[in-house]
Length: 170
Length: 318
Image (cartoon, each protein chain N blue to C red):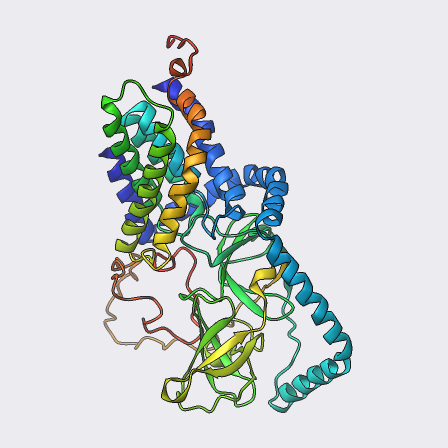
């Protein structure tokens, strides 16, 4: 777990930085891909519920620093989504090639919806006419991004899964 | 469960404007800002290539419009000068100084909004290190575009005037009537809410910031746009066509202005000199817990003084 956390930190920071710089301007139909949510979802998929929750909390909290919404809103949303996705993967033994992108698409769209609904409950005007378009575009853009991010997240969660032998903890 | 509770705790603390939470947020932004600058520098060509690839048609169309506009302007140069002199005369007739002496800080717009739920913010490359503070007005050569929202050491977020949650004290330059301009979410049109709703609004009448005389904390006479009536008959309402083009923001000016304290010069009443003075209790330093905003109300409907700006870090500002 300690080694996983050590691998996760630079990945989470890099993802949040890229999300707030590259994807601030790289938009599809006015909607930015949610790279942070994709990484959280994939962490849950490859590492289980606990890994998904921890990654969701840390990435969401760092993302909250840059968002105008209440501090902790993204952390709560991504923690819950990462945990749920991680819980659903427990019966998976032989992942197929389309699993990561499809779960990334579904999970990131779900995380976006959860974020909007929780934000609305906290008085933010997030559930509006644009929400449907945002969720759809986030889901669609997560397909290629999920496929691209899967090897990195797989390594982040467990290098042994990526084909390299895991080093014993000191 | 622990993580969820931690997140809920943070949200609660943020709503109560607990100082360390804001400090933590600002400190983390300052910490990762160098990484974001490097990332922007590295990936900026990618963003430009993306724009060229997916917005080429728009660029072509804009180029044609600009060429046409240049041709028109070359023929209208004299008339443009006359319009400026007319405006100056107009403002002089109502005793308004055209040029303000407010110090300005020039800043570059570095990126747009982060995330998908707040398209009304942009980021500039100046912060508290340059003397900026939340609530300061941000302008271009054409007029007001927004107000500073969050200010870190080297960067700041600007909340655009088109945000539906922004309301700024304004004044009709000709009639002098005061009111509020409110964002509508539209990049080009603002709502104009006048104190006297029956005021006759001249088509094209210049709208400027009201200044402290109108209850606003922004410098007076900063152009906002031109007023007109939208709609027909009883459903018509006054609106303001924004003077600045929010789609072409590269450099902006931040007006380093502090509104004068309205209580300055007012003496506090002296306590009565009775034989047995009653010890006065210490003023309470605790902030009454704010109520979580109801989803059925918005900050634009809450009663607020004219020209009130949303305070930075407030839980009510999205």
